[in-house]
Structure formats: structure tokens, C-alpha cells
Image (cartoon, rainbow, N blue to C red; front, side):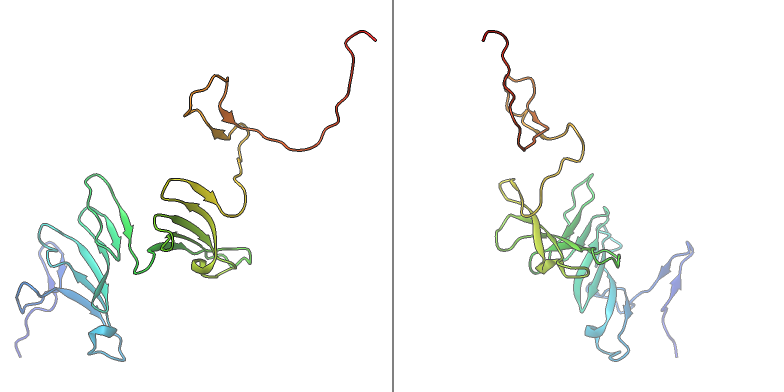
Amino acid sequence: ASPSDRLHIGPAGNIRMENTLGGTGTYSQIRVYNTTAPTNPAAAIRFIRDISFYGNDGSICFDTRNVERLRIDNEGNVGIGVTPTNIAGQTRVEIKGSGSGNLTLRTASGNAAARDWQVACNLDTFGELNFRQGASAGADPNSGTTRMVLTAAGDVSVSTGNVVMATSGKGIDFSATSGTGTSELLNDYEEGTWTPALSFGGGT
């Protein structure tokens, strides 16, 4: 008979959905429900604000099944599965999974040679960063082949394939160690066979 405001358009043109029940623990929220279970919040996708959304924090949070999944803080840092670390002057994207928090890159190509990639922290050998490739088009790279590993000690291990220098004159630079040679750049290497020819400069 006397409904309170459910949609409020302010003088500045902003739209606000407000919970009028009060209390510091209540959230203003937009809910999109699964129509098969409209009264079950566990079946809903909720876009929910941080409790200090209008305060000093200003974070925007996204949660599903009442668990926070993604947060954008007031500095523009993004955290997926984790609250991002706020470091002034830096924009960060942080990902933390329940297992080996990873980033999967999937291609939209339908080519049979297309492969999906994954960059993941290795749970078996702590401190390693693995680059994995799917075994076939559309295959999950999580169970694919590890192509390159960056160890905790800073070593780079190429599991399969070669390190290819695509530009002539470029190679491996050893100039960090001072030497007496004219160059410490290994920029060429060839392997093959040759037949020597013997010639005399004089005499018999």
C-alpha cells in the first residue's frame, strides 16, 4: 500500500537501488535469479557492492553462490579469487585459484592446428611457472604438454623444441662477465662437414 523507493534516479542522473532495512551488514545489490529456483540465493548470480562502496574503499565486488569471485578496487586493480594488492602507481591483475591459480588463453580459430595455452604456477614443484599447450584444437591445456618452465632459481627450461633467433646477428649475450675478447655475443653456430685441401706455400 505504501511502497518505499525501489528505484531512485537522483538529480545528477545516477540510478541507485537501495536496501532500506538499515544495518551496517546489509548490502545494496542487484540479483539475477535462476528462474527454476527464484527463492534460492545459491542459484543466483549477484552483482554486489563492497560494504564500504560509498566510503573510502570504493571497491566493486562480483560474487556467485555468495562467494566473492572478482573485485575491482578504487585504484583499478583487479583480483580474481583474491583481493588485489593495492600499490600506489601500479595497476595489477592478480589471480588465485583453489589449486594452481592459472591463466588460460583460448583461441577462437577453428583450424585443426590451433592450440590453447595456459600459464600456471606449478603445485608439484613449488616456485615454478609453467607454460602449457593443449594437445589438440580445443583441448584443455591443463592436461597438455609443458613447453617451457621458469624455475624458482630463475633458470629457463625449454621442454620441447628449440630456442630460435629470428633476427640475424642476435644471440646469447655473455657481456655480464667481463672478458678480453672483441665480442661476447654468441650470434652464430653451424654444424656440418667439410673437406680440407692441402697446399704448399713453397718448397718440395
